[in-house]
Image (cartoon, rainbow, N blue to C red; front, top):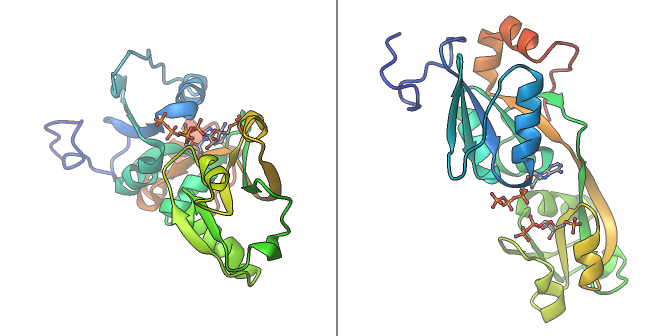
Length: 219
Ligand SMILES: Nc1ncnc2c1ncn2[C@@H]1O[C@H](COP(=O)(O)OP(=O)(O)OP(=O)(O)O)[C@@H](O)[C@H]1O
Ligand SMILES: O=P(O)(O)OC[C@H]1O[C@H](OP(=O)(O)OP(=O)(O)O)[C@H](O)[C@@H]1O
């Protein structure tokens, strides 16, 4: 297929490996983790301030906001993304390889020593509305969800919400703000993910690229 501009998804043929394979990585905390992983499989990217698209041999590496990685990978190619983001945004992707280099957890957090049942009828603020709804639904606990985009810790401290569902890494943020982890919902590792069609059309090459020995699974 003729390829006029390999930066454009329109010109991208997910069925053909090799000639400019897309690898979508997140900006933010996982950016350098992603570059280290790419380095380990032979894709050497030199980061540059404000630069979002990088080329290395047959690869085009594209950095987008973490929440947009599943969308771009859904169009074709491979990517790196936190498990929570895949579950929140697009579950129709393949989880190829778990990267054990770093780990977060997603937890229910509040300023009070609530039991989960105490949150029945209360408001929970989160960026992870889908995961939060499913978690409380499974327990038969009715909550109102307030969708916020960051600095969630402010919500229980100002009375805007009774609890939050948010990421904990070192625990410094909740400690600094006098908040308590009530219950862990899930551990979050970064994963190498793939568009399904792209994977099955290029399975051997991708396995070789990722050095094999990994499980292909659905969530
Ligand atoms: N150490 C980690 N382990 C696992 N997943 C991570 C880790 N760091 C970040 N993530 C993933 O990245 C997502 C967004 O994290 P981050 O805090 O980097 O976003 P952001 O602040 O919106 O990014 P940006 O700085 O570009 O605005 C998380 O929801 C999680 O999926
Ligand atoms: O346990 P810690 O190591 O303190 O990390 C947890 C904090 O990190 C994330 O926010 P981030 O820094 O991405 O900023 P945000 O609030 O704008 O999302 C998360 O939402 C917590 O606020």
